[in-house]
Image 1 (cartoon, rainbow, N blue to C red):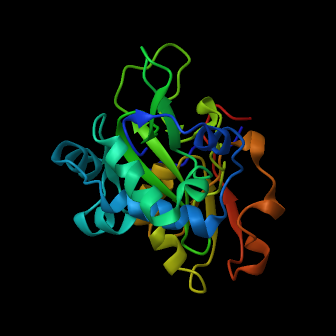
Image 2 (cartoon, helix red, strand yellow):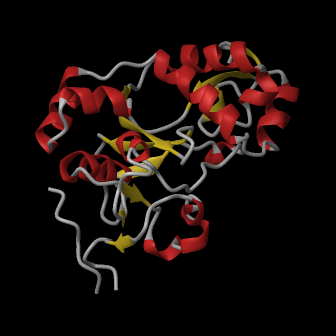
Length: 238
């Protein structure tokens, strides 16, 4: 049993069915294109005072909160956010971004619009080794049913679009430690790795669960200057 780290669319309007087909057949966009789209989304979201205070209570200072780029995903205003992505990338490219979805009117299926998926809550940017935002994870605010997950990827899969990449997450501060750190700590949970990196002063990278752990494939650590790793998953993992 491994030890647990103590860490601490444009619309509404009539449906253009060619748009729907593009969305339904979408493959996931490249890392660079996802990064571009997600940064557009971030530019149109804020972190509300309640969520900022909650992050501070966890142990993150103001500078870390700002550097990590957390945002609050509200319930309303999502069509305008999706429209901004579409205006920048174009409809076909935007349909390949996990989270950009085509919605239809409940009473009139011929009416539809582009929107942004995801439960309301705190958005945690998932960053790769190059610092690109390759996925979005939301810490949900809505009630969690038995067996439900508090953290969920923003994805289009349920709407026939692109699924989110289940990716390793390299915190901003961890990436800055490349070449100077004596070891690399691996854990599960993007927010946990952000917090641990800040509190421990060592690079802590998140992997998306021990069931998907394959050391050679996690962020190509074999070509980084980290000299050792300490695998530290939640205590219920054997």
